[in-house]
Structures are given as C-alpha cells and as structure tokens.
Length: 342
Image (tube, rainbow, N blue to C red; front, side):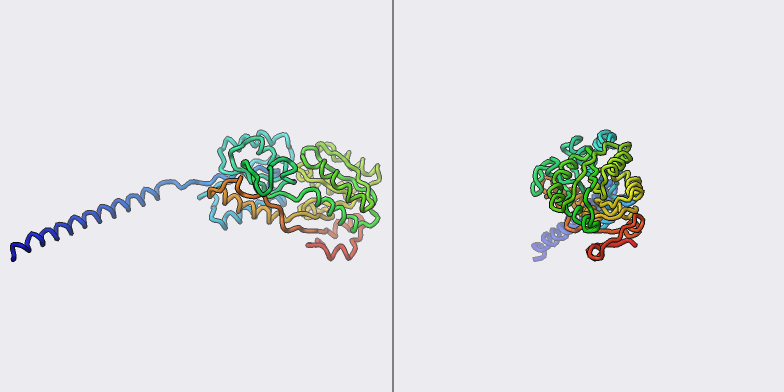
C-alpha cells in the first residue's frame, strides 16, 4: 500500500513546487511590467491656441477653458500643454502663425473668431480644429452643416445675422429717437458684409437707416467715426472681427468722444467702458469648447461632433458710459438687462 501511495505523494509535492515557481515567475513578470509601464512617459496632449490676444477679457475666457480642462483631468505640465499663437490685431500674421502650429504637430487647435478658424481651415485638413466661437460657420463656409460638419473642424458658432437685428432693436429701445445707425464692419471677416445686408430689413421695420462703413484696418477707424458724424448718425453698431476686438478701447473712446450710443457684440466691450452689448455667453462657449477638445483627445473625430450654437445670451448695460454721453437708459430697457454696470 505504501509503495502505491509514495509516487503519488511525491508527484503532488513536485506539482506544488512547479506551481509555486510559476506563481513567482508570473508575479515577477507582472511587477516588472508595472515598473516598466510606470517608467514609460505618458502621452502629453498638445493643445494649441490660435487667437487675437490673451489679455483683458480674453484672459478670462481662456481661464474658463483651462479650468474646465482641469476638471476633465488635464493638468498643464503633466499630461497636457497649451501652445499659444496670438496675432494681436495683425490679421496678416495669421497664415504664418497657423503654419507654426501645424509644424508643432498639435493634437488639436483651439481657435477664436472667424478669421482664425478660416486660417486654420486653410492650413490643415488633418489636425482637429475646435472653434471657441466664430460667426455663422455654415455661411462662412467653415463647415458644410452644423449637425454633420465633416472634415476636421467642429466647435461653437454664433447664430448669424439674426442677432444683429436684435442688437439694433435694443439700441432703438434705448435711444427712441434713433434714426441713422453707422454700422462698422471689416472685410477681413468673411460674414461681416452679409450681416450688414441681412440687418437692413429689421432697420426698415424700425424706421432706422443703416450707414454701412467699411473699416479695412486700424488706420481707418478715426475716418470711420468722422464719416458717421458727417452723415449725422446718432447710433453705432459694430460687427464682429479681430480688428475691432483688438482696438476695442480706441473704438469705445471715440464713441464716447463723439457721443454715439453704441451697441457692441460682446460684454468685453462694456466691461472696458462701452455702452451696451448683446451677445452669447462666451465664457460658457469656452467651457463647452474644452469639453469638445476632451472628446477629440479621447478619439472622437471632429466630423462626428455637431457644431453647437450658444444657448445663453447676455444683455449688458454700462450706466457710467450712458452718463458720460448724456444718455438716460429707459427703465423698460434696464429691467431686461442681464447685468448692469453702475
């Protein structure tokens, strides 16, 4: 009996030893693999920013973008970097700046404004591009369709010319005697001339005449105001574009000097001393842009991410600016304001 059990017992011990050796080997291998993986540098997401400036209100927008990215797990200097290229009102620099970003092999390019996204569209068909905001992306030809953008561009877009009609309506309510509005626009913004034309039916309904004034560059700004005053304009509408954004303080000062009640496209102008603005909540658009960037970095193609329009709009009034030009804002307008600067 003993002779029959002994070989089985020895076999059992031998199997245990083999099993133990396998466990040790697997443990060592797994530990080594874990150490090797820990030593391997994780991919750092390279996010590139193409914009006008990062000072003033633009700095607030980018802070919102960075904060939302951080909330999604991206820490600058650890697993992400942001490379900025700023054209600072010099639109002729955009092609070269965009080419620099393409050479950096960015994982995604964030753009602000119509001119910047058009420069990115011309520079690359492969690097994903996310718009933080732009004029109507379909009418400008940036994307084929909001729901199915196709190509490498997606993000946030403004609602188009309709918003200028709303701005003119609010300006008319603020200045009941408004009869002639100077509408400044820049040809560097591909949708600006169209926006002026599409605002004219609203102007006719409101019995307001639009004076279309083309502003090609910074040197034309003073002349544009002179032309407006000469034509007896008693109000000002400002179109979108990097030229006006970069020269906001100069425009605000000239509007005050010439006592022209002005309606601007974004609250940044009002915070800088302008009279009023009606426009999309750009802080929210930048936060949403960060979420779209996150989707792309995780593998979703821009062509599969619908372009979004803003859902929240702000009407901001600066009573200090009103007082400066001797304007009393009617109570029925004040109550409609999202925010009043006193």
